[in-house]
Length: 221
Image (tube, rainbow, N blue to C red; front, top):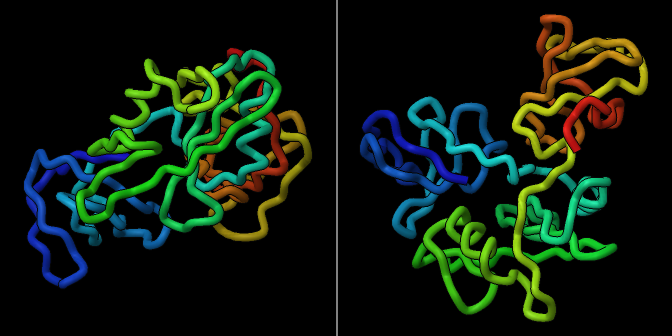
């Protein structure tokens, strides 16, 4: 993930990063703190204030979803060889994995990092950002064993704000939760947490359990 600085920021603590308006910043983690991102610039890691940045969003980034959920999404009808998503690594917190559909299975590739140089790689060639790595493997195989070129998912969840349908009624138990009834259509606005997503329904916004919904049939497959 990457972001563009909208304002200058001067670090006031040793674990913060100084940056200038227009700087491109690599975001390493979005969930640890409500006001700060863990980020990296020029090979140096630190924290940056969220409200100083504009995120460069990509539909292929799914955040904190499990390996199993990634496989289920990629195996949906309509996805072809090379359909992929990027998720947070389950085995290595703070790192990323690329899940790619090939034939009747899903392959997983751990994204390696040269922390000192601020580079990302799968094999020998290294890239200044995860975005650059992804773009390279759209025209160069991501696998050493097979010819697999990355391509966008065609499934429902590849959309930036996909719609899902409620499988069950849900009654909010806490402030900030989104209630709905079975069959309701919900527009998903954030799925960084694997268990609780954020969305809107009937002009209301809130959190809801991801297991209570399924892809909406009206989404383009």
